[in-house]
Length: 516
Image (cartoon, rainbow, N blue to C red; front, side, top):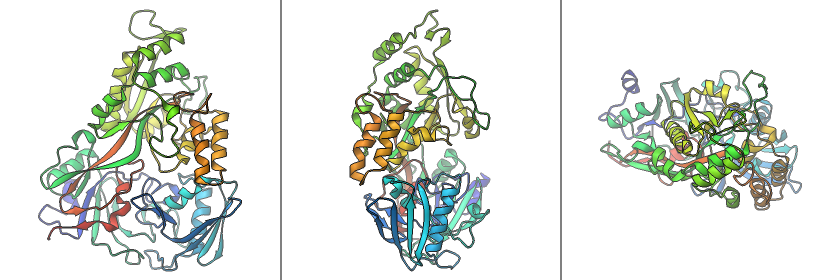
């Protein structure tokens, strides 16, 4: 309870101009955009060149114009002239160029490897020169927050300076983050003097809500339908998905540079992966793990323009799963209910983040369902540090979901095999890579769609269930929150991956509707 007291707000003392949000999502590495902060949601402290409005229309943030050259290699961007960092120094083209060039060279999550060079044209104009055409580079203009060249350094992630709507007051890691409006921000007036983000896990947020100490709380779907008095349920559509990432290469004694084992002799067989896809009752998983606040996931980009539904045609069919396994030689030879082939049992561990109740429910539910087709799954809850060591050897319940077709490249390109959490299973298919390369080189976003779809299934191969099936996608989430009846959020953008900070994308436009 000490954490609750430390917030400093009770139900009676909360004023209209202070907010307490328990939305989770504390970044482990701090608030440095170059290392990935803000990639799934707005970076809060920093401005980006472009942004999406709630209707997903592209609009300028720092940029007043953005033009791509005819050869699709150079973005020419004109900047607004009234952007000022929270320390009072003006933001210029030098800061934008520094940010992009530094992100290119850093080993972070900002995906700007396609950048050859960012260069200054004048104080308020920059050019971003690419190594080769990449149509999805536009999304990096939306996600990468700009940092100050003059003061960026080793301690920046914990003491960020930006030109965005808020500035940091205090961050006590694992406990809370306090922010206040950036007085130099070029945007609209923000009606809140302070915003406190309380961390500590799901139970902390639920307790804060039930004791009247928070105005917004991210809640697990299983408990979303019982908001306390004075609060209501807010359910936000998202492209946030959960699925099982399979190791697709056999175990042959290989390890990563850090010594993590690579390969799994069971899931390396496509028949196992296809059978898992056929043996999952996704509708039941939506009810079990999400309390109905979601929908089945068949692929990584369901419902988005670049999705290919033909690639992911799979439904719950345990009989078909059994036939798939039988045809591949996986049969129960000793009557223990577990199939085997060549002395190898059809069993594997399924890791999930132990602190995440939704992933736990998905892992347990999948294990029960797959037992019916003769595959033994052992759910293992672990920390992300432990998962990082085993994720190339054992399947993991992973979550992704971005408003960019480039997410498919991250998950399925041979070039990203073993890079961070992206292609953990070391999946590679040269034809898939070729389709994605052609999509990136397309003359326009519209022209790229056919190649993105072909990467999923082109009639004879692809990364979808019809093809190599390196994943078994399970559910698409709705993000659920309890919100004070006095807090008006207005229209909200569709959420990317991450239950938490994405909802702050339009925080400056929120309003308090009750009298203090």
